[in-house]
Image (cartoon, rainbow, N blue to C red; front, top):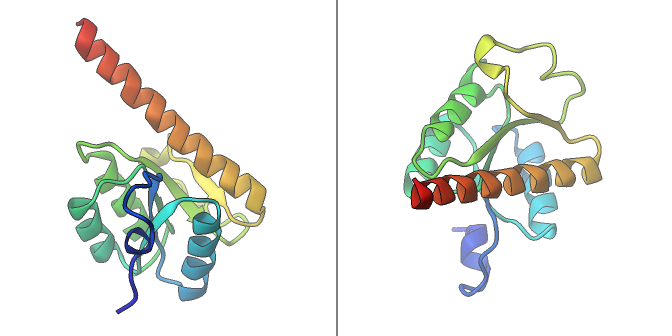
Length: 148
């Protein structure tokens, strides 16, 4: 059995945890390698069902999902499930295909972030931005709870 990213990292490091969901092996391995090289702790899932199980077992700062996997709405379902978790991870659709996400938007995706992988620096910048925004939202909620 291949160890997960979290099992390969020293236990004393607290890196941002990312769940990457994609049924295409080449895309998944490429993105996983890029994210880990950038310092993120990456867990992967090859299906929506596997991703839902991981979301229940572990907390993630960011969930990235391909838009379509075993069904046209599988990726959207994963992100919707992630957004209602108590720990509220940042979420985004990720695709290696130009214009694959832009043309297929449903009403619930109005605030959905889409990341295209064709530009590595842009991809890593967007990932860092999403994780930073999540941290800011969590800090603001904690402050409101203390004050109010």
